[in-house]
Image (cartoon, rainbow, N blue to C red):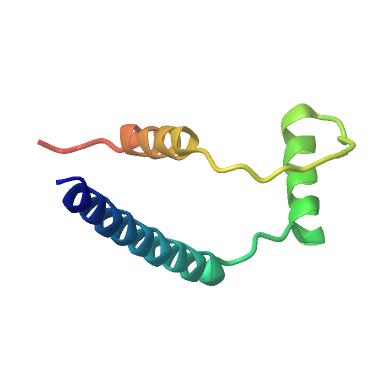
Length: 88
């Protein structure tokens, strides 16, 4: 009886190991196709002029960090959708 359970456990572990290996390869493939985010000098100039127009003073940009936020994207979509007047 113990041998049967051990064989089942070994088979299950091998199966799980194969699935993890496949998932790792899929993740590696997805990450390889992901475009690299680069902050160009042009983008820094655009950000600087936008901030200057908003604040009224020329900002000194010391650091820029790229972060992704689903809530930021969701809020932006909600704002745009709320601004449209729907005809009934």
